[in-house]
Image 1 (cartoon, helix red, strand yellow):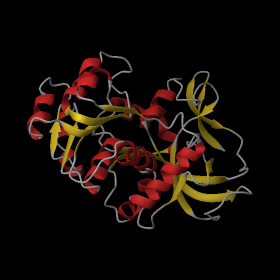
Image 2 (cartoon, one colour):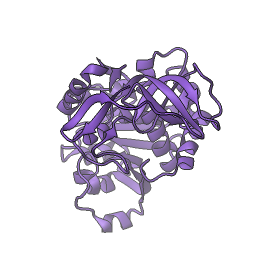
Image 3 (tube, helix red, strand yellow):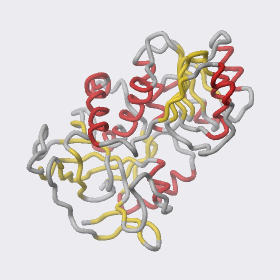
Image 4 (cartoon, helix red, strand yellow):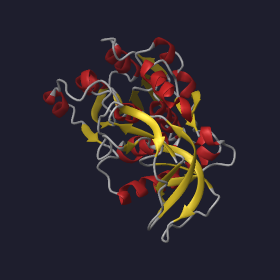
Length: 322
């Protein structure tokens, strides 16, 4: 079968053996895949948790059909249209855990379905479970113009946030954040963004920051978060190391929470999928929570899809179809 593999000379489409499901695994006939920033790093040879390196089939987000079931797989049957996340997705067939997937809504095609699994699971966990957002509270999403950022703002609105602030350093994308739930859009490279947040919150700061940038905004986030507020560290697009004002962190008594899928057990990931199903799935099925597709590429042009991602001019998801 065809797969996009990181080889000795970089990533390329090549032939690999078709996998067989074992235990609770499901064999998926992949129809479409969503691209993510972690995928871009792995195309350059970087590790993402235990994944990455020579011989790795790339990809982590997909939509397709159930082709075969392992002996312990439950909840789906052959032919079901499904979507989910998991390793080695950029291939004609891939293996998925039977509880790390969703049934694809009947009103979505495969391309649309492939945009959602990473965003809805990551940001439901960050905003609702780890961030403990309550109705009437205020929230800021750092890096809001990414696919997961756009979803985070929508989830915050759906869960009753009274004020949602999104950041983007790109003027065009910043100008579109209000389409996806932002009441205020700020430029996190502008030193005055903290003052904008404080003004919008009556000088208190926000209850919750979901941070995908980290790096240079780490200590600024502390200033923009209210006393006894929360910061959930989801991503580090701005850098993994930077100055951090420990005194301000302590003085404001901020709960600073780190999250990642990379160190979670399969049972913990299953719990996240279950939480999405129990809490926000009706809003997914009704398309109240959805993401724009920036561009769709055929699988044979997946290299061009990653060039488009690296140019960093897109809004929403880039998708490849098989």
